[in-house]
Length: 113
Image (tube, rainbow, N blue to C red):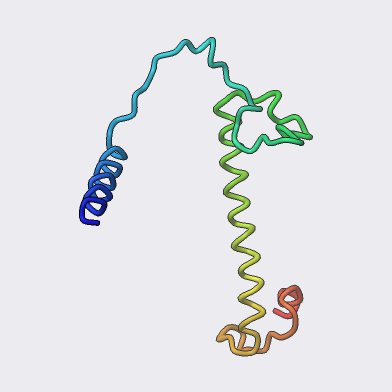
């Protein structure tokens, strides 16, 4: 039992030390590693790379990565907005805003302001 515990501790220490080891970088030719939009994360079967408006056809690698970053950012903002709807439903009548006179479903709160 003691040797098993010692083996587990040593393997855990070595495994965590390997996480900080420098990664090996191999030099390759850029002509062989040409950028392809279909190789980006998110291109999954059965749809593959989904670009119905053709933005990727005219974009270089830097621009396409900027589009991808903006898409993720807007998705996160939308998720926070949905949480805002849920919070608005949960605090109905107990809010310090607008003297707690806003009532009803959260979708109608804007028109009541």
